[in-house]
Length: 92
Image 1: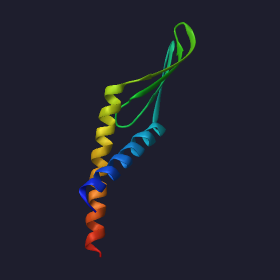
Image 2 (image 1 turned 90 degrees about the vertical axis):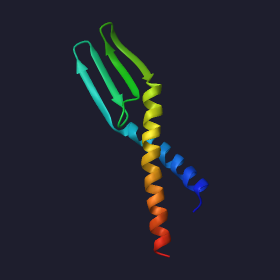
Image 3 (image 1 turned 135 degrees about the vertical axis):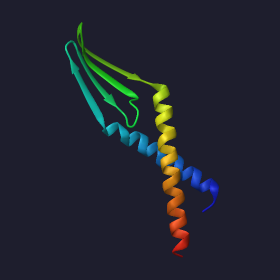
């Protein structure tokens, strides 16, 4: 497998991992605030449903954390794709 194909596969896999990280969430309940934080390893999507003024429905992104999360999962997926290619070539 050539380098270009490894990079493209790693990018796609990294994006899939980043979107899959939305499945991990943490709910924060304190008086007058209910917040759900999504993302792993960094929180990059926030959903606020309760505030001091009453029920709300506010979604917000942390763009820096999203880009860092994408970079993290891209590096992990690059290592996985590279190892898979090495293993596949050694077994042929």
